[in-house]
Image (tube, helix red, strand yellow):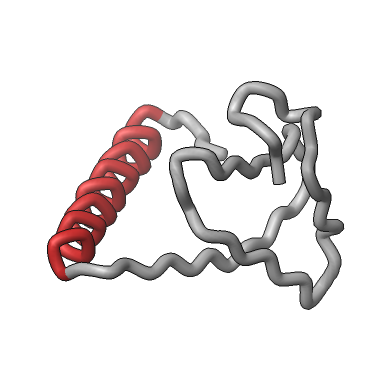
Length: 85
């Protein structure tokens, strides 16, 4: 957990990535989290909850658009022989 959105080294708390670890926080305009680049396997389960149907609809549409673009990008990479991450 970071003190600001500008310095990845200005840490309030660090949570080690151990099996069974859970971190939960309320998202706000002054809540920041992140990590430095990592090489290797990363596993994460992320849960989000919303408080209104309007926000839910927006998030569902955003997800569908994002998934469609990722599929399209994957198809174009396959056609051109480019490998993705």
